[in-house]
Image (cartoon, rainbow, N blue to C red):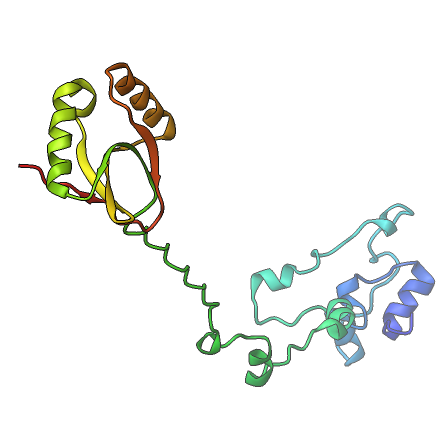
Length: 216
């Protein structure tokens, strides 16, 4: 009631007529003209809009926001501007110092260095291998003769091998091989024995220089 004009207060108290929400605090043009001395009389009870108990609860006038849709430059209604005037949110600009506070300078970032794996060791020049020793002697030429003799005696067993020698004290070992395993060497020893050739298995130590025997 305090926000109603005197005319609106009189209409509400005497007639039970309340203004629209958008007209609160503003009199109708004809009432303003009458108050300013115009010839038109004020509304009488007979001229007042007919009201019923139910019509007082019905909304009247344009819906809220209608004036806005017709022209953006029109002022908002008073019941709306006052109600939401305090709800504006002020957005403070973010300074460059604050923006940089949580950033990461990629120019100063150093990726972790993966350790370089050590190269695999080179295999020894003379690894340990498995052989079959067929003879011994100090003279390499004589050992070459022994090899040819044995190869003619068991060509199916020694024909696929190349003779090798390795020092043994002041003498040399005459070797057939190398064999793929100790079992293969054992099988060759047994096969040569059946042909009357006595031999035995020999494993050269790692680093021992086993050389190929050149035969004419």
